[in-house]
Length: 223
Ligand SMILES: Cc1cc2nc3c(=O)[nH]c(=O)nc-3n(C[C@H](O)[C@H](O)[C@H](O)COP(=O)(O)O)c2cc1C
Image 1 (cartoon, rainbow, N blue to C red):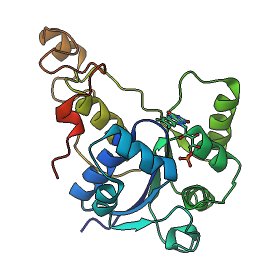
Image 2: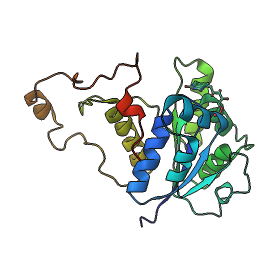
Image 3: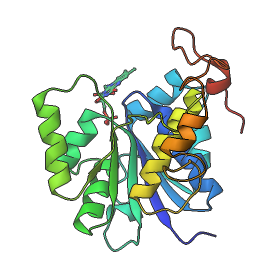
């Protein structure tokens, strides 16, 4: 068992698949996970994926209600290695920026910040007004890591799953969770010379990633 303990928050921004993918991969790494889903986080899971919130809860080692402020992760005395909120809504970002600790996901993040543990927020909103940007700045100033789900393309993603995985993998890097889920620049042909030699488009049409129709392969869960 990997001795690490990570909190995963899933809030009500679009992109529930980021949190679900993080839970799956942390389970593969045998990391102990502590999951909190907000009301709209649960709702987005149902609307955007083929998972039920209970399926997602079953992927975590521990699962808590967002109103449970007496959960272990509500206290700094409980040892935790880091926290990821994926996706992170502006509501949850705002709560964390202001230490408005009325819900468990916000309280747990506040506790991690005061204990100087890594807190990674996959903030998802577009476009952003100045107020959103200020909230992100405030969280960055108190030690949080703002990691919006903005994909890289140099590893030549072919599917939406590739895009999701690469962002989740970067969030693991930010929490210092060792993994080898995604190719890294400078390795395995991911160099200027390697990419120049590998002719072809960045995203192939082997599998459509157009969002006009949900991609059934992506939305089906294969647990
Ligand atoms: C389908 C759907 C998609 C949404 N997407 C976003 C989003 O991408 N970003 C965001 O900040 N809020 C989004 N919202 C609004 C949030 O769910 C809402 O502000 C809620 O208060 C978030 O609360 P929570 O952080 O406790 O989950 C969305 C709502 C719905 C119904």
